Length: 509
Image 1 (spheres, rainbow, N blue to C red):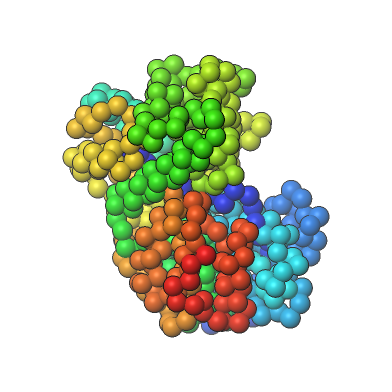
Image 2: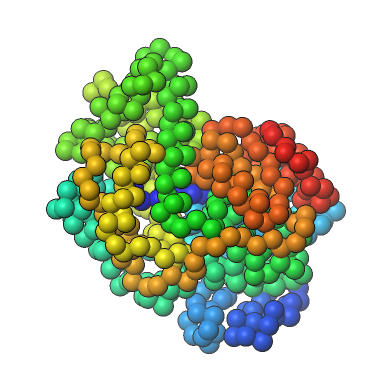
């Protein structure tokens, strides 16, 4: 069964940094966590954003700083983490802060807000809200940086096809997973790994709120950011003015069920891509819907034993071909690059666009350096829920995965499958799946896309029910939609955030 794909890809960075030096709000309780909030809710020292953002020319008013939080809230005097925070101040009649999380887990909110601050500068959102992003502990520009692999180790891992589900093949794959877990343990320590989950990130979010001097926040979460938003709403319902959750994660699902539904979502997106490809002559998958999956396997499966040559000396591995395909399915704008890469495999020419898509997804730059978003993704995900350790459970899940996502399934069902890396993680989970809790009437709007591959539409329907929220349905094949060019969605979201007017029941865009 394939490991879960990262649920937070936004294509490009979108937002920026907000702030006001202000008072520290009183702690929520007299617990150690409450005392930590009181101590650590002090305003950051604000300065320019050059240390975090490469180009600040389009957000000249942006301010950046750091907020300290304890690695372990039960030990507030112990090791600290420094959260990177960015704020792009409102340019008009200010309502308050709009805090943004782009998802992942592992994506940088600082980078997202930097891009969003520039894009929304002349809009109602830019005029009425300070745009704020903080990088969760271990993520992006926050320190310590959660990094388990060197660049060379990551490159070597990508050369592994991880497709052999014989007993020996499964043992080999699990040995790679154990090695990754061991690297994380050696390089980050079990105390840090045990405390990177969403439960602590929600506490960190409230510390940042206090540091900003705000009694209430507005929140926009994408993908995994909806899971973080739901966790915050459960813990701090009285500190929310308005919350928009786009590309919803259903927090009530166990990891295997969530993965299977996501795989089914990618299968739908693959079929949408193939239908679009087939509408033009020369599609590498042909024009017969019954053969699209087989044609895809004919192109990519040989890479298991022999990577394809590319202009890049690394070549295209089977793993990278799959990752590149998945990346392209997040957004229609990438479909042409998927077609180009598959045509390269079909013709025996350079399929380099698939390698570039894989590099983009995995955070590898032109110099061969990786961001830490993939390491952070696994470290956070592995403590967010218990993962079964029984091999038979994973074999049964693999059988179901082959049924719901045949384009991602190599070979035939063997009765064996590797356990997820999280099943051998060195620290226990800090959360368990459970339904989201409403923070109160008319505080939350959920946005869900009908053919979203990474966070399937049904998850948004369920999250809206759990939180008593209005649901905006967007008809399309892409991952998340707010502030991505759809006037129907954006008009409803802006009216809710600015005027607290809920969208009409059953709104479809």
